[in-house]
Length: 151
Image 1 (cartoon, rainbow, N blue to C red):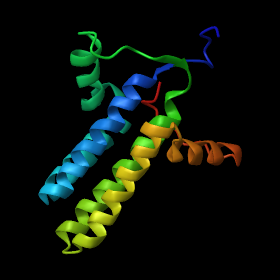
Image 2: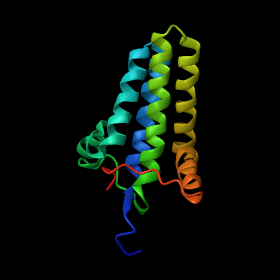
Image 3: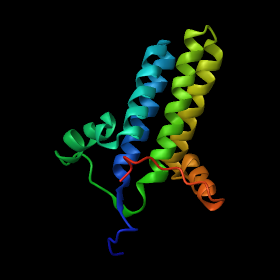
Image 4: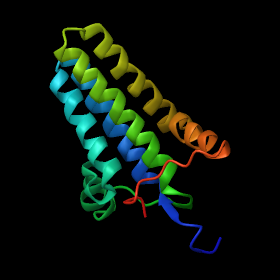
C-alpha cells in the first residue's frame, strides 16, 4: 500500500509494547497495593494521548528496545487515531481509578484498573482493541474524535 495523505503507517510492535507495559505496571500496582502506580500509568497514557511525541512508553520502546534490535518494528498501514483514542480511554479509566482510591473507594479503583488490564490483555494477546472499535463506531455515526496534535 502506498503512503498517501490518507494512509499512514503505525508500528504495531510499539502498540504491543505499550499494552505489555500497561499490563505489567497495573498488575504490579494491584499486587503491591500501590494506587500511585495506577495514577502514574494513567498520567503517562494521558500525556501520550494529548501529545503523542511525549509518550513515555513509546519512547522507551524506540530508544531501548527498537534501537538495540531487541524488538523489531511491525509497520502496518493504519491510522494512529483509533489507537490514541483507545489510549485516552485507558487514561480516563486509570485516572478515575486513582480518584476512587483517593476518595476511599479502593474496590472501585481496582475494578477500573482491572478493566484496563483485561482490555489491554485482549488487545495484546488477541489483537482486538475495544477502544479502536468504539472509535470506528463513533466515526461511522458521524462523530469525529480527533485532537489537533494527532498528525
